[in-house]
Length: 282
Image (spheres, rainbow, N blue to C red):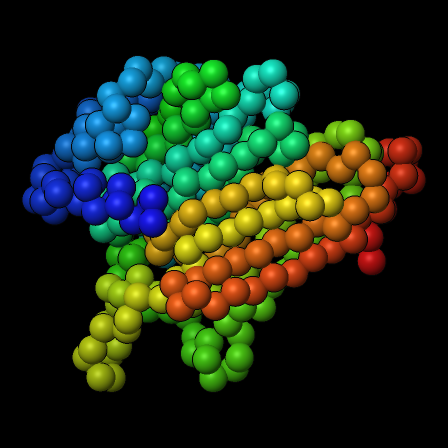
């Protein structure tokens, strides 16, 4: 796996090096490149040390998270997706997590907006980074320092197997907009997303890693979003994204986990050309 190989290379850094580099060098950093040991490794393995500039994307995360296991993240692009110029890939990175590459998300011009919202785990105080690779190959980024801990080693919130919740999905489309305009959609996947780092307090054994590893979304058979993710994404993975419907069609989501179990759901989208009369499909 692409993401797995990159993560292994990045983890050549020791946890001691992570801790030494965890404190921010400025009170609040909007810099694309606060230098940490893991970020230096990732720049080399992911981007071949190409220049990374500030701009194009804005990253929003809480400075201090209430729960390290569920940290909301929003990546927002500063321009719309156009066929001649668009964000083709987003990287979501948590420097000090055991698996620092939380997600690699491929987008197209049909995404409309390269805006993504999700929830992540943060194991210890860390920079969180959003890196955008544009269609012309340039790299843009923003980094934020987050104070949170214990997110990756926290146990799942319930017994998914006992209640048959694993794999249940909910896909919803926003009610505003018209054909040819970006429309928001939300995907929620019921899944424990076990990190493999949480200890069962009764057996004193670690729950084996078991998590969603890929998410694909298409509209009318054309790709909208393809994400390769890891356990740094929170339990019950959630994604908010955009797509551009040019006519009636089906928005479809396909999810695969580390046991190669596949789950899918779809929703019909029928929108009027009039914004005032737009309604989501039943």
